[in-house]
Amino acid sequence: MVSYSFDTVARMSSETTYGIGEGPATRVSLSLSEGTAEAIRARVGKREFSAFIAEAVERELRGQVLDEYLADYESRKGPVSGQARQRARQVFDEVFAEEDAWPAAG
Image (cartoon, rainbow, N blue to C red; front, side):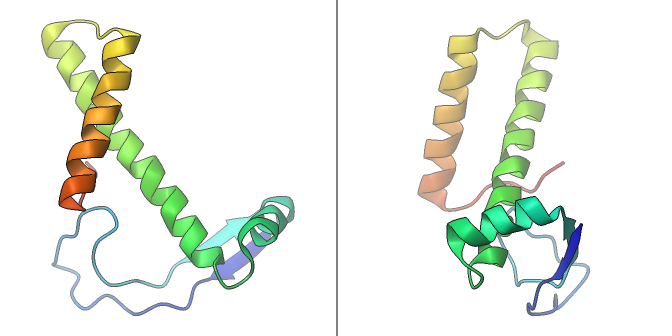
């Protein structure tokens, strides 16, 4: 297991709420298996390691936000087909890409 601490700018205010991918960078500690860390380094290089992790985490959070929305929709309206689910993902991606922002998770 490899631990990483990312050199980033500290968050200005703990009371400010940011959406996914927004706000100043904050310092975090992360543990990964050596194999995963090596695979990331091999793919993006040492200098882009933090950016790669940040983008992967943001994608995961955005997917969870959409999954939460779809689960809520299904609880109110009934099952969503696979085709409708895929279309919802496309629409969310298009809308938030235009606005260059995603809502906060949760």
